[in-house]
Length: 102
Figure 1 (cartoon, rainbow, N blue to C red):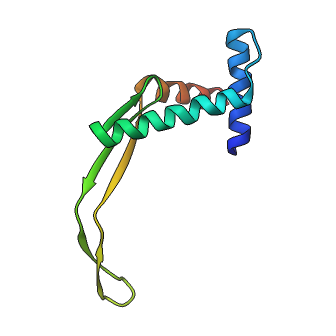
Figure 2 (figure 1 turned 60 degrees about the horizontal axis):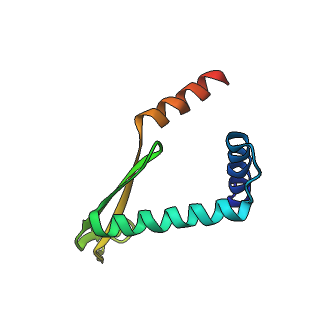
């Protein structure tokens, strides 16, 4: 599913729940805003919970040395941040239920 299809599906789902049409542009703006909030929270606190969907955590790791598997030469990998995502239990259960219906 590409971004455009995802936005249209969310807008259709919102229409079903709200009983009124929700423009795709509004859905896109809300999701972009949520993305910004999550990024800021991860950068400052190191964790973010998207209610009902996923828990995100950020881990800073220092520089390290690795080895090129082809040549055996050592190379330096710069410090960075790794973001991990873990689905909320209720969301994971919902996915399992949908898989079971198929």
